Length: 249
Ligand code: IPE
Ligand code: IPE
Ligand code: MG
Image (tube, rainbow, N blue to C red; front, side, top):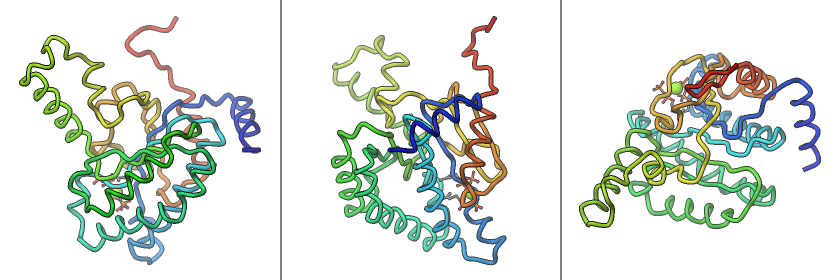
């Protein structure tokens, strides 16, 4: 992509560090809509535009992995019509953007509980992953019907089953093995987790993987996310002193 070197060069000239893996808790669609006298669904629709901008920015700035939190295991508590609309948006996004993302060499992976999704959606997800599996550009991970606690519990169950079947020695259970059983298997842990809309919590996003992530919170609502907010978040990230328990001399 022609803009790629330019954006990376500008970022490094500005002293910005680029996270290898950035996770985003895309929050504030409802408040964005309410502030404009619109429906929550309008906010979610505008949120999809912000997703497109963010994928583009991540590619331009040389981020390797981008994980977007788009529907949490707890979001089922919302009114059924809102849940249904968010599901519709995922389907529409895939239908409208998959060809282009594939051409742009983006590899797409969907994490979260899949078993309980309707068969049609499961099939679509599998097709998306299969089609883009060998792409070597941006890793785009969509956390859909995802909850960190469920993910860890599922990993624990799978490990327990192996032990019970005599296929795994309990002494072999360590951090690396647990990570291998998570949905994010094979991905680097997020360096930066960004949340929009001023809320300062993880809401069950990447609990295990965020152990040493830098957390950045911005006040803008997700539909207002653009390059200026992105650069502001990168600046905040770049100023952090990441020690991982050690000391920097
Ligand atoms: C984020 O926006 C989108 C999802 C959680 C699906 P919200 O819908 O949570 O918007 P607010 O927090 O109500 O403003
Ligand atoms: C977190 O946002 C989930 C997603 C962004 C998909 P929520 O709006 O659901 O989080 P809470 O309920 O405010 O913690
Ligand atoms: Mg919210």
